[in-house]
Image (cartoon, rainbow, N blue to C red; front, top):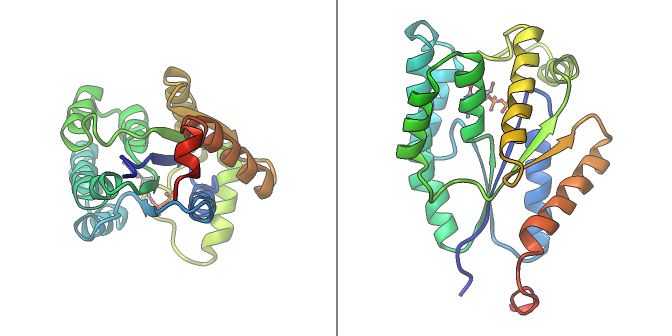
Length: 223
Ligand code: TYD
């Protein structure tokens, strides 16, 4: 029996390289013989993908930041129930590109939504069962991240959050760093300005030390 799988989340601003590194980590864990589910928010389950479209298209923006927060929570609730918990319970490792910390930062710190509402929604949607075992924060200055995101997008339109100012994105960055400082056991901050291979290696070392290292040798050797 495998026991419960591990849950890893990636957080960071636009153009931080989260998605690339989440996928690279998934490949590396699979190469170790682990069963891995790579997912993302908002989205990650059929119901949540519908809500993702509503939020990111910007059509819910006129309803206000509280309503957006509730929509993110509704999407998360479905994602946790339909995708994350079943996988963890089956012994799989789950990697999510964004999770609760994005709500705390985008809607809470920067959007000024009451933290009490955010925490209450977290208790309902995530509880204690679906809190990440490890959260990797890829930190890059806002101007660098936004420039990368723009290059990647080409001539396409900026989404709801990418369209905000550099100041908004720098505030996000500081808010993420603030969360990481408060929960050093769950978070690992990786400097995203380093070359991609270096960032990848630092992430891998963190996962090995914090999550693979804690397994007993007999368990690692088991098929
Ligand atoms: P996405 O296209 O997935 O971009 P990224 O590569 O930056 O993850 O867009 C997700 C956007 O939604 C991103 O701008 C952050 C925002 N977001 C929130 O504001 N709150 C949340 O709880 C989550 C999960 C995402």
